[in-house]
Image 1 (tube, rainbow, N blue to C red):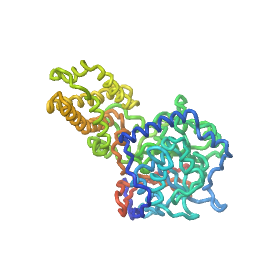
Image 2 (cartoon, rainbow, N blue to C red):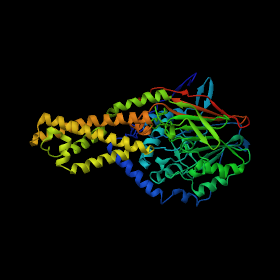
Image 3 (cartoon, rainbow, N blue to C red):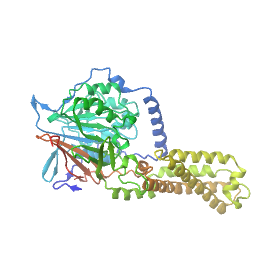
Length: 546
């Protein structure tokens, strides 16, 4: 990692405006789980039957946004920025907005100028899109960091991720597709996808793959209608790193990137040199083993909770964590990850403190444990409390079966065998813990009387509130580190707001594209603190003429 050599500070002493300073989303808060789950189910059902992009296709297709010329003359060079996965906690989003809006940063005494436009590469707000969510979790911190507006202010483009699609793209279109100001950035797009024409025959295409990982016919026709010439260089930006999940050139998978490259870009004899995506909340770069001028970068460090970069101890890594990606006959090998896999592993161990970061889940676990042990204590409990309870009250079997089914349903579906084995073992551990607490309570308070029953219930509730989160934290830690399951769930529980980053691009006079991955290792927790930034690696150079 290359630290910034001079300066290294960004302003963080803006006066914070009225919107509430939300903490990072508590994904394991029971209320949050219920509301997010309902939103996701509704959006998936609607997404299969309606597609907002179809409405866009009825309008006149916009021309590509022009950055290759200025005042009738060819532009010699251009700076622009990319940041993805924003709008989670206030501190991280605000700090990153401060950093990306600085007029200039410095690396080895070289000025890295603020981009003439900022591209947000998906999932602009968490947990789900809404007018209030965008206002409080995205626009609020952006406005506090960069309120300045002028004719020379930078532009803003946004492609939607799955979280932006959860309300059918209604809030997204209202905020980003009406040529309005978002803090100190001016939006220009009229659709959820767009093309930017850059200097030296470079293009930047922003794709919208909706919830179904699909490109609609109107979008295909829009990109096909562009004046793409032989020898042009293309940067593809999409909300998901499709190349990590499957071979995008294998026709069986019907990949968006593979389809667009094969049917639109290659017939024009243009070349895709760079694929960028967010969705995974870390930085990772894969490079073509034959030619370093072909790169694939995951960059989801704009403000959302951190996701892991380390691979499991045994077995194959999850698709999103694999170090080698195959694209047809080409092989892309991972060159860099931020934070480092060692740091990522150490952070994963914090799941043993799951309760302290998700205390509301403890209340829910206490209720579940109480429900498992609820009811009169069966006669003969000294012979085996759990066994006699099931013998004399068979209705408990139905309830326990439902509890086990819930844990199996929760288990990572990417690993079918683990889903059953791990899910059942996880569920049985909680059931056993509930009966152990009940056994202790019976020995303490006896097995009859209203007072004793209330005391038993209270003891089991408190025990469940403590043991339930501990067992879940241990399960997430072991599952993610041993077999690679629940990697995202484990880090969502940690809600780590540090290790943020964005990408700064420069197209020079010789047509070479330079990429500066700029990181913020520690996000300030108080106003007035300085933000230290560093260069993760590089800069990465892509020279199409080489």
